[in-house]
Length: 187
Ligand SMILES: Cc1cc2nc3c(=O)[nH]c(=O)nc-3n(C[C@H](O)[C@H](O)[C@H](O)COP(=O)(O)O)c2cc1C
Image 1 (cartoon, helix red, strand yellow):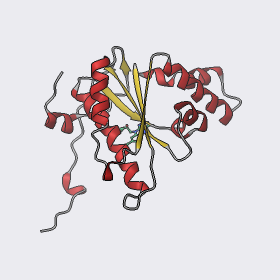
Image 2: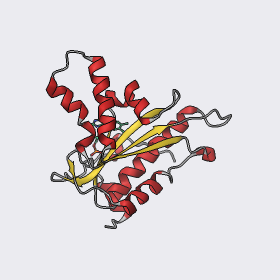
Image 3: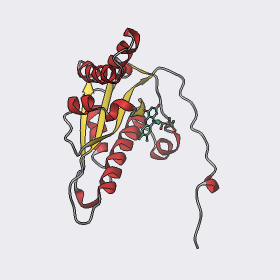
């Protein structure tokens, strides 16, 4: 599905309830190309992107479970199962991590923002392709076990897990914001 760019920018909303089918191989390529088109000062490519699908969701789920049990050894079996199945809330999950490098002109915060822009490009491409998507983090995004399972180095950090799939809910209308609440004008 091709969606008008203005529609995409104004009407994208988060879709937390997702189901099969997820994007096919060609659509996944479009998603990844969009992520890599994020603005990026000095072309540092300061990100690491991990595609998690199929059994990979179980693999990262096990790391979520490991973290959950370490954080709370008394965790009930229901909560354990919830942690282990978190990634199964969508057919496709793409983890976007910031991977900053030392640079004389580009501070770390700018590189973090570039990784965030890559995540947002995934959200917009998912919408343009007719899929629902939601950007999630939560404690698992920062957990050592999950970071290790994703293959992140010490200086790298998850900016988001982008869950993508077919909407399994009525998609709400995008809220209207009052521009003057947030914007001032000079000149
Ligand atoms: C960095 C970041 C982390 C987020 N983490 C979560 C999360 O863990 N759980 C969640 O429900 N929403 C999370 N959100 C918010 C949703 O993805 C979403 O943007 C928000 O609910 C507003 O909905 P909308 O996109 O339809 O405007 C996060 C957003 C950002 C930018």
